[in-house]
Length: 122
Image 1 (cartoon, rainbow, N blue to C red):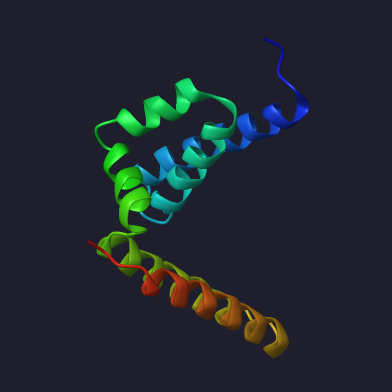
Image 2 (cartoon, rainbow, N blue to C red; image 1 turned 60 degrees about the vertical axis):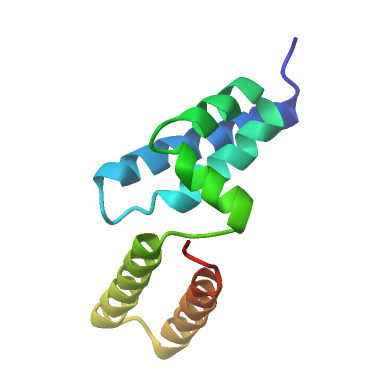
C-alpha cells in the first residue's frame, strides 16, 4: 500500500511529536504529555500499528487513556507547564524584548495556561 502525501505528513507529525515527547521524559524543560497526545492523534490518521504501540506502552499509554477518557492533564504536567512558560516569559523580559512582543507573549501564554488549568487532573 503506497503512502499518499497526506499520510506522509501525518506520519512525520507523529514521528517528530513522539520523538520530542520521549526526549521530554528525560529533559524537564520539554513537556511530554502534549507531544504524546499529538503523536497519538497523527498516528491514528496514518499508522494503526504505531497508534496501538503508543496506546499500549507502559509509560505513554496511561497519559493517552487519561486524555481520551477524561480530557485530563496530570497535575505535575500543569505545574511544570506553568513554571516553564513563566520562566520563558521572564527570559524574554530579561533579554530586553519590547513591550508589544512581551504583551503578545503574555496573552498567548495566559490563554494556554487557562486552557491547561481548565482541564481536570484526575
